[in-house]
Structures are given as structure tokens and as C-alpha cells.
Amino acid sequence: MAQDWDIKSRSPACEACHAEFTDKQAYFSALTFGSQGYARTDFCEVCWRGKSREVGAFSSWHGVFRLPPPKPEEPLKKETAETLLRRLIEEDDAPRAAVIYILAVMLERKRVLEERDVREHEGATLRVYEHKKTGETFIVRDPGLRLDQLEEVQGDVIRMLDGQGTPGTDADPAEPGAGA
Image (cartoon, rainbow, N blue to C red):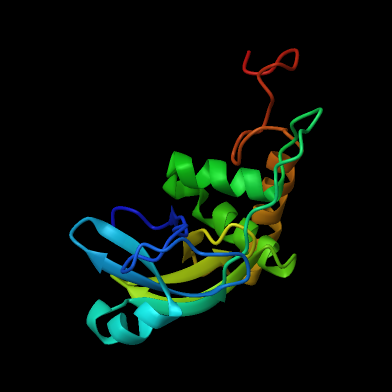
């Protein structure tokens, strides 16, 4: 599998009738897999009733559309579990699969992400999460961590959130004597 995770944004409008979703409106999402990879389509309730059998979805779910709140300005940018997850997914770095998975689980426990489905695909377990506020879909590969691996991965996550480097690095290059 070329890509073990991805983010698919919720559409602001129905795929079939093109009507824009309104705040607190029910919507239906379908995730399909084709030659271009994963594709997400979103439908209003009326169109979903007419299209649900035609879609041939890998995964589908129902949600409630919420208009995103205006973003407050942050005086200082700090790394959060969500921003770190987004950055690592964007970098598409396979060795960080365990860190990405732990961050997704952390955000699920904080009720930021909601697990919508679990699927086996090309020998990998994929977990489909939906961001509760933005409606974005996160596809995260489950690395099948063992209990004896959790402490090390949790340490990597903590160091990355504290801005102390990336997993697997023992020293900060800015420290005196590091890398010398």
C-alpha cells in the first residue's frame, strides 16, 4: 500500500444535488477506493436515499454537519496532538506510523476524532476517523503495537509535543556537544 493514512475533507455541499449543507443538517459520507486511492463523497439525506446502493462504498457513515467556528488568533503557536498528527500525516513518513496511531487514539479519547470504521486492506488494518468539528476523514494504519512497545512510542509522542525533536533522535543538534 503506497499510502497508509490520509485526510479527506468533508464537502460543504451534497455531491448529488450540490446544495450547501446547513448547520446541524444530517449528512451521509461514503469512502470509496479506486485507482486514485481513497475518495470521500458526502450527500444530503434525500440524495443518499437515492444513491446509497450505487456508491459501492468501502465505508459509509452518518453525521451532523456543523459550521466550523471562526478560528481565534493564537499569540504563540504551540504543537498540539492534532497539529502534530496533521503534520506527520502530511509528511507521509512510514516510520512514524506508531506515533501517528497513538496521536489518533489520543484525539479519539479527547473526543476530537470519532472512529467510524475499521477495515482490512492489502494486509493492513485501517482505522477511519472523522474529526467531530471539521468533518475531515483521517485514515490511519493500525501498526499493531505490542504492550512492550507502548512506552517507547509514548515517549516519542511526548518529546515531539514538547518540541524536543523527532522520534529516534537522541540529542538536540542545538545542544552543545550534540553530534560532535
